[in-house]
Image 1 (tube, rainbow, N blue to C red):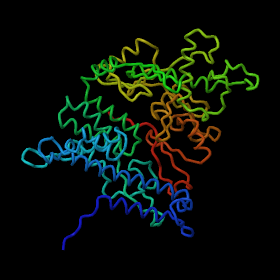
Image 2: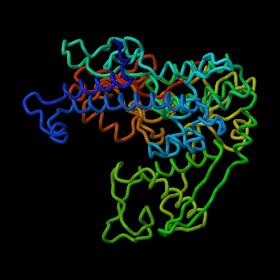
Image 3: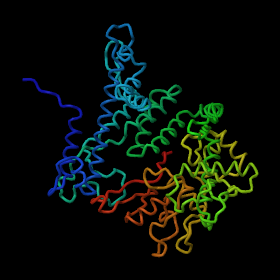
Image 4: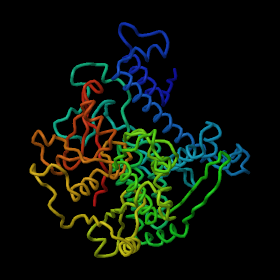
Length: 505
């Protein structure tokens, strides 16, 4: 009697089924999907969404392995190279894109991960090690992990398991892997760029560092960490890369059939720093500027967006991309000498972060707030010569930033330090830069909370309201902000890490 090997997706499907059954209302389960979802409570439906993510991850990892295996198969006729080309596809990424009917970039990411985690065969047919074993291991759930286990580096005193109340249904579901397929694709892509000048041992060590820092992180943080790791590998090539990026700068203007004009700019990091900081400064100035114009008697030329219609008040009514478009228009309107510009140009602050050794030796890299791509020491020197910048030198002397309770408002130096720690809005996954945030007292100043870094955090207006209105709790542990959800969102109140991920020295 032969035994059948388990389907690789069987565990994920069983985990989802268990979570779905556990989320159904005991009294009114419902007859259809829509009715069942309607009858689920808030916590249960969020648990279902999380489990769907685990199922999707399992599907994508298996897809990457399948595509990696297909890419290594020779053509049946032995004349067309590989099975992929024999099937009529230019490469494995195109194959996934066309057969799955997804975007080319999505197919390319899955194929790239597949090539990185698949063991090739040598000339004699022996299995060789996959190119990125640390990435392959991180895509799989950790042994013994639980679906609802808190992150290993969570704040002290927090619950490490969601099963402490004896409710067996909370243990249902699939274990979580620390790295997503999209995150793996970013790490592999960045490290391959530096692989031409690195040994295999250096590349493997760098992939371990990238995976350790990127575990359980949002994709934008994984991207930034991967770029920093690549830059450390490519110390000698950092300056030529800066020059190549500057030469590749482009700006195109194209009128669309809709009547809109498309302005597209591809800028090197040092150029993008001024554009981003300038637009954000103008947005901040117009956002905080009071408007006393009555909509019935206002001169249309004086409306902030130049459209002749009153702009609605409130921080969340106007999308950020539209605010940037308004700020860009106002910049050039001001330069053209128009006296009807809505705002005066605002002084721009560009924050560049580097370490003391880079300043002394000229080796290493620096980063600019709001820009993921690092810059080399040469670009850092050019920026310092061109403008009044705020250098944030790490591992060096700094001003006193803890003011106790005698001062209510955070100082400029404290806000810069909070921006360095939090990277903008500290809420996990939020992409608002520091210029869109407010310094918030974790323990209210009126209740004796001090004005210092351990009691401060940067939050955008939306997440600032979430803290107050939905009763989230914030704690700072070892310089890392943790957000603890209210019991009606998560009965176990598992802490969620926020802030910026920092690459260890």
